[in-house]
Image 1 (cartoon, rainbow, N blue to C red):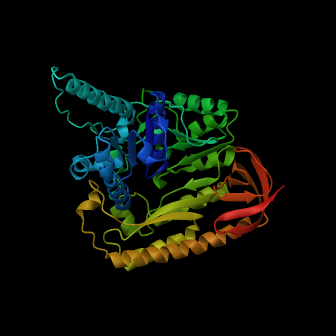
Image 2: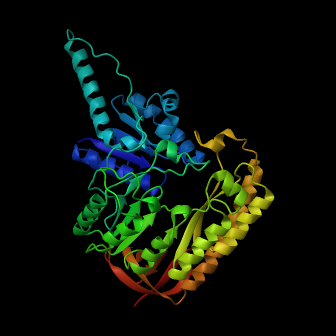
Length: 448
């Protein structure tokens, strides 16, 4: 029986892409393995948003060279954003890789794998036959040309038994100056709402309790509807999914501040299944930096959005992304970011040092903030956010929260905090918990 090993880096979109490719290969007779040395096919689903993610792929896939030398029939593929961004460099630096495939071509991967296997079988048969015509060298497949996904399929494979990711759109039109996503995933294209709702219904029938709707910018859902169709906004889509029996919770990611408008906040207020958690990347608190980033909002605009959300959904929590050391960032710019973080009171944040990304406009600018300064700013920001997160955690003390069990004695609150509680529980079960202690970012309590 053929075995498949898949390693994924990056965002939830990448996780879902990997699930879809895995599901399609399982239909072809493969079984999953968690050990790459046991696999007949090894796939690395990659991320290019930050240099560090690419460095890990160069290192880990590079280490497969010896394995490939010992097992020539092993098939190694590199998928995802890095495959699109680095293109031929992958074959030059890692000649043991058999194929690359961009995000828009994920449905082609099973066919590519099958064709490679057939070509090898044919070559081996020709060589064994002696008098048969030899099979020539076949150029390595590089499925990276399409700029956006041509279709969306429903693939019934998910790694979790209670939460399922549903892709609702692909690509981004914003073209922020630091970001590679518009070049690797292309412009926005939306999946037809009836297809999304039908997939959510099937998941509910299969016992899934929570769905997470995925897109690079879910708030702009409805643009360039794949297969035609108009008139359904993201808030309207939330209404349709909210009506599905069996689905208990709805989450979504990611949102752009420009498109996070009042009707989204109203949906979060009125739709009982939509969780009170918004991930809203701010990236910087400096208007000058935000302008160079091409974010199309100011710090005041952003804080105004948070104020509107919290006026409608008082218990909503917000998480964010922040980049430090963007080209031209001064001490005053960084102080403005610290001021915004103090004002915003994020529940949590993903914070990174700036690294130039291929094709992005900022990659052509001088990366003029010294690495030591980037490190210092990042540590200062992390320390501030850690303090705020701890302070925000105290608000949960003696509060009653609803946890969806993921395993016995552990689940997640609607705000996405981990919750630990006493007693037995089944995955997907909703449990009321009285919070009695805080441990790190987790809530500890007793069942009610």
